[in-house]
Image 1 (cartoon, rainbow, N blue to C red):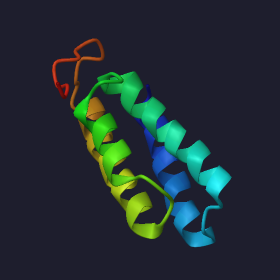
Image 2: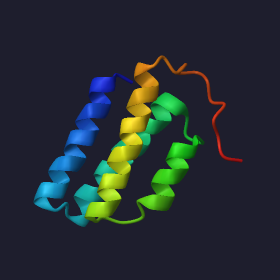
Image 3: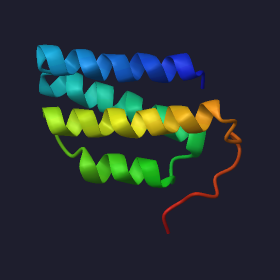
Length: 91
């Protein structure tokens, strides 16, 4: 996944903060965030687990937490984290 695509999901989250996501829009956005993480780090990576744990519902703090997780994923992608490497998983 291209880091610019991650930027798009992060920006959509920031826009959602400004216009107050409705529940449906939030769930769609959260699924896009999960797909970003899965694409780069794998579906069992700890960041996907964090997204589920710390972003259970819509709200400003939850959206900010998700954007922070996505920023970390972007950093890993930009630093050359091997796309096929799935070592960092929660057991």
